[in-house]
Structures are given as C-alpha cells and as structure tokens.
Length: 47
Image 1 (spheres, rainbow, N blue to C red):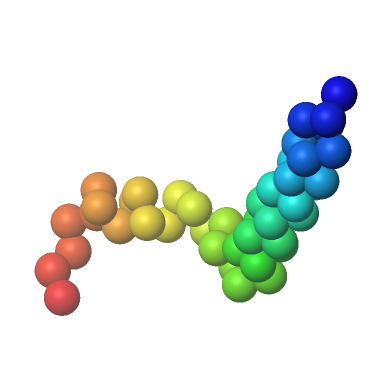
Image 2: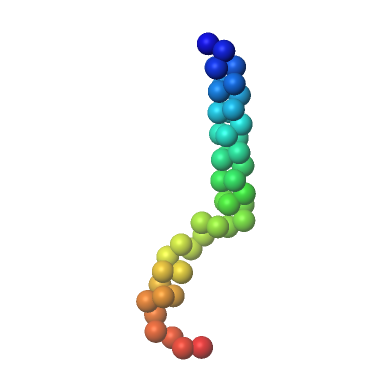
C-alpha cells in the first residue's frame, strides 16, 4: 500500500510531462503536412 503513495504522483507527473510535450509539438506545427516530407523523397526534382 505504501508504494501507491509513490506511484500515483509519479504516474501523474509522467502523464503531465507527456501531455506537455504533445502540446508543444502541436503548437510548433510538428504534425502539419506529414505527407510533404514523404513526397519530397519520391519526387525527382534537382535543386
């Protein structure tokens, strides 16, 4: 039972950290136009 006093706050901290990183990625447009980079490799355009 004593381990829950450690694991519950630790798991909440991990959830908030993952949420913060995900929010940062969305706000910095990391998920915009995902197909563009894949298409850039396929296109044979020099320059």
